[in-house]
Length: 183
Ligand code: ZN
Image 1 (tube, rainbow, N blue to C red):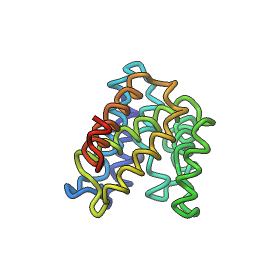
Image 2 (image 1 turned 180 degrees about the vertical axis):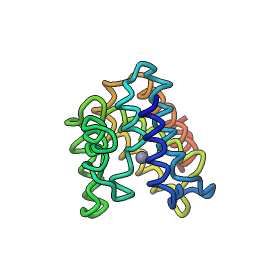
Image 3 (image 1 turned 45 degrees about the vertical axis):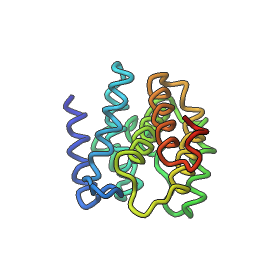
Image 4 (image 1 turned 135 degrees about the vertical axis):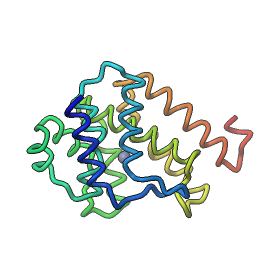
């Protein structure tokens, strides 16, 4: 519990100037908190290491924290999972997205759990707090991409996989032009 709260403290400070992309402009920290909450709801016996990594999962990618910094503040196991789920921001956006699909089968089980819960949260946001400026086409393309990323991650949690499917179905129903086809 101590380590988990330390990770919330670390992530809240790291993300202090960031907001989610939706009109609610939620503080960014709400997102990693939701990701770890989804994991414990669906997989209640998850190790604290993975929950800490879920809380910290965007601090390398979005805040410039380093793997070594996380290893020093926490431990190598947490730092390695965070690194596994971090995109290389030096790459163009399309390359980063392609790499997530490509690398998903090689993730460790802990990283797969974080990846899966992250996509449940992000696809869920397409219903509750759609990113400003996104059109239907972009939203549907995002759901398709997220589905491809999580395909090899499903094995780590039936519960999270089922949540993903239910949310993806709802997003497609709400945002599709051809609503009859998806209901
Ligand atoms: Zn995330």
